[in-house]
Amino acid sequence: MRDALAILDEAEARLAPLSLASNLAWWESQVAATEENAEKRTRAELAWSDALADRELFAAVSAAREPGANGAVGRRLELLHNLMLTRQLPDDLRGRIVELETSVDLRFSRHRGLVGGVEVGDTKIKRILRGSDDPKERREAWEASKTVGAEVADDIRELARLRNEAARALGYRDWFALSLSADELEEQKLLDTLADADRVTAEPFARWKAVLDERLATRFGCSVSDLRPWHYADPFFQETPPDGAVDLDPLVERKDIVALARRTFDGIGFDVDGILARSDLYPRDGKNQHAFCIDVDRRGDVRILANTVETHDSAMTMLHELGHGVYDLGFREDLPWLLRSTHLVATEASALLCGALSGRREWLELVLGASPPEVADLGSKLEAARAAELLVFTRWVLVMNAFERALYADPEADLDTLWWELVARYQGVSPPDGRQAPDWAAKIHVAVAPVYYHTYLYGAIVALQLTAALESDAGGIVDRPEAGVLLRDKLFAPGQSVRWDRLVEQSSGSLLSVASLERAVAHAT
Ligand SMILES: [Zn+2]
Image 1 (cartoon, rainbow, N blue to C red):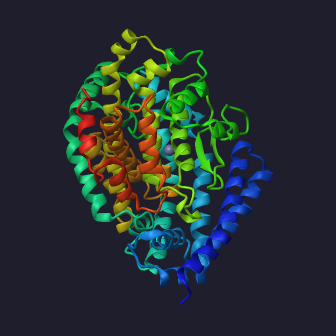
Image 2: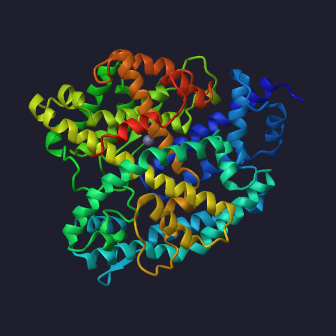
């Protein structure tokens, strides 16, 4: 057997430039969506994924690794193993999965539902569900959001079969189990945490939703028992409805959102000028319409793509993405390439923590310069809005996770019926009468970002834990450089030299638990 250190050094020397090239190509393809950039990106990603598929290297890494080992070498082997694991498929199987994923993804982006005989996209459907008072139009919009499901459902079942075949070839029960293992998530711990999350949110959610339902019944002139999915404000009831939300847009009108973000991080002791200088921050034709942060080289080239406008949402997005960015800049100098990275739960926690600052009283007052009476008036409303958001989101993650677990346990099951059982149980939404349709398949994540939703919930929970720890140890976060020091030393600096769950424990003072979620949702109504 070759020396573990030699295997690792060689692997890093080969992977680091391919990763850099593929990150750069991805960035270029997002800031300018040209054919040429798309081709370059495909080539770079192929080279990267071919290197990760290398059977000989994977065999050497597997032989050298001792699962669960700590220490720099143990962690590097573990991370490299997990990075390569999902690429270790027979070539024909890998090819069929990629082909099917691409084809489903394409049908999602090309598909248009019909409302009043006119083709509508997702944005229009969302606008109707948020604004329209006409139940008939709402129902049509909701139905239109589901028609893509029937078009892709058979292929998603086929994808689940293929993914399972791949997972079993690697010795796992199914794709669900393989995905968790590659992300270093323990299945039993996840199921227990989700059951706990169900327990602590069920009652406050029911209470909050009863108030919402009364309001909706009045608005649409029906009884509460007549409410159906199209009465809620988005196709899956995964977001809080706009009625009852707090409108902070007037406070950021004519403000420089980027300057506010810089000021926020200055106050915590983080210099984000370098990130901002390399970033692409404002809307423009031909660029990605969303936002993301990317660590291009794991050596300080961190960039953000955003579409900043003068809204409070934009301010939150900037803080969120910079929350990823300062993490990537905070790794200890001496860490080797494999460890200069973040676990999804940890980086999402940092981003959510920073993004949530924009809804805190101290931020409105100290950074935005809102007057104390203005802020006092908003305070409890903001807390209630945040709690409602957490409730709606948690219930939705419970649906997604239970559904995907069932999908991979048996792709042939009656998924149409199961979906509505889960929606009724966790979200308290009644299906349309006599509904028989693959409505689950209309959620694009099931096809192209499988077994992932729980990561967001874990991230949200860890963000709450970290916030509580910083409040007690640094007296808060906004304009508290001590909070920045704690974040950097305890969360960012170790990179992935410490497994994510231990990192959570070290940085927040306790293991991941729903206690913080339970406290946060108590303020919902
Ligand atoms: Zn994020």
